[in-house]
Image (tube, rainbow, N blue to C red; front, side, top):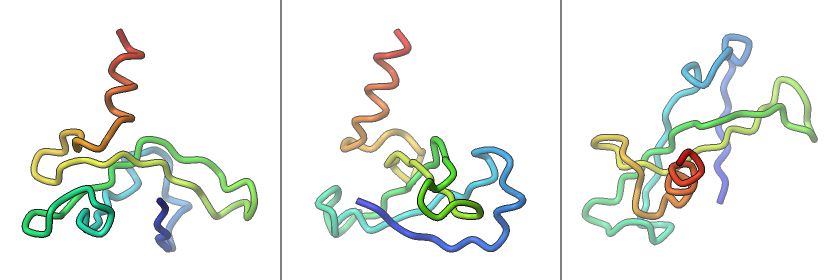
Length: 86
């Protein structure tokens, strides 16, 4: 899946901490039920867009629970990173 976000201040992006958290309705992707469907997107890396070039960037994210930013049950990336670090 993908989402597009327009940011007008990319010159100020120097690290992942400069990229905002973002969210989505997990019920639309079958990642959550309707009564508690908020999911958070946490930036984990970003790259210059190879097609459009600067100032366009591609931000890779992982899905987290918005309450505590723990990995969402559907977040297989977090488990992979954990295993790779062992």
